[in-house]
Length: 205
Image (tube, rainbow, N blue to C red; front, side, top):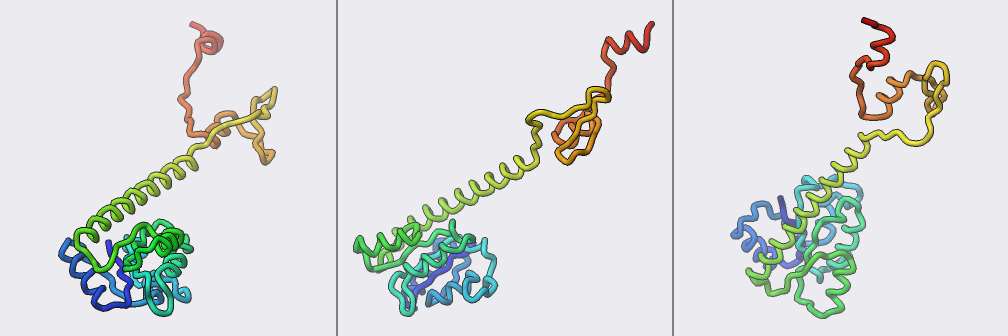
């Protein structure tokens, strides 16, 4: 897991890095602009990500930055389908409702106020990381379910069957034995037995 810190202030980046590393977060990526963040995420002119996309679990993004503010950067990151579930926590001294509403509307998950308070930062980080992990688990379960549904084949509707030989015609007009058709369209298999009537008819004692 890594945390991407995006802030034009060297002092703020240093404080965030110190608090996070002291708390046990090992991999902290520090950049000073939205454009550098885009490069890390592979969003700048189709550049490949600087690291594993799935490795970045949280972005700490300053709102007030030159060239592009954090709200617009957040909006652009969230516009990429790869990062729709990536939590972005805004780091800001701007606590007016209008700024925060804009940030949340752009897709931000939470915010941390400046000056940085250790307890607030770590509390919000824990809840954000936990939320990200829950979302990842939910996505994994959904993928497993989709795969399972793809593998399940169900017979539905009316099957055209020959009145004489009992072969079944498929949707492409090909004819198959009942056994081969069912095997090809379901998870069923066959165990070959002899029913009592056939036993008496063909194998009389």
